[in-house]
Amino acid sequence: MEASKPAPTPGSLGRTLSQSDGVPLPDPSEYRRIVGALQYVTPTRPDIAFAVNKACQFMAKPSDVHWLAVKRILRYLKGTISLGLHFQTSTSMELQGYNDADWASCPDDRRSTSGYCVFLGSNLISWSSSKQRLVSKNSAKSEYRGLVSLTAELVWIQSLLQELCLPTSPPVLWCDNQSAAHLAANPVFHSRSKHIELDLHFIREKVLRQELQICYVSSTDQLADILTKHLPISQFCSLRSKLTVTSPPMSLRGDDNQTDSNLTSSPTVVTEQPCNNPKPTHPTTSPSL
Image (cartoon, rainbow, N blue to C red; front, side, top):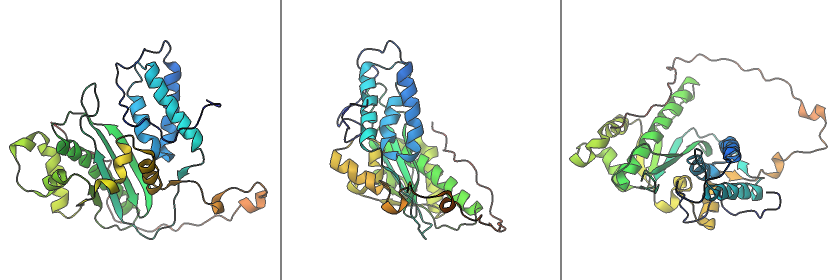
């Protein structure tokens, strides 16, 4: 890979991988080793989360086509090796989540892919790109199942902040599917939505208690779009920077001339403050039928 040409994006636009693609690799150990290593990169590179998630789906029997897709990720990382998550000082403690989902994108089982990202103030603190466990009959149901995962994540993060004595306002969840947003606000159940009734109760309860606010966002401003599909270069780069994946500023770059005395500092004394908030519980999603 040292002589390879860097790629502008981690995946080919319009390319959908399938289990029937290509010829099985005679020795899949290298494929599994590289994909396993890429999973350790994603905690600081959300821009490759979708591509790595797709590569993980073929660990059992990878083919030469799947191997080319993994090489594409490596070529992209080669050209963007200086990028990483940039955290900045922020006085805002507002939680905001962006949720997106495709519909029946997997050619093997027609299951959908969900993606979400969570911001605390202006900083990205959590994200996910994953394949849904059940087949959705339409795009609204697919989007709503993604909302459940994001809601559970927001509830857990908020309870953690409360345990740390950091007050927050009700989280705001941004969704680009109006049908899914209407399902969360409509108190009437329809026969067409019975198969996700428990998911509906889970989110609707949070909305009615004013513990969660669901708002509509246009598809062009949906930040989680980068976690559900491969995008054109310009759109991909725009969303990547909005996820605060950038090069480090000059002020944070290392100085080889620094001495050990410049790198040391006096210890900081932290004063413990009492807090009576309940302990956070791990995020759980409502059971799906």
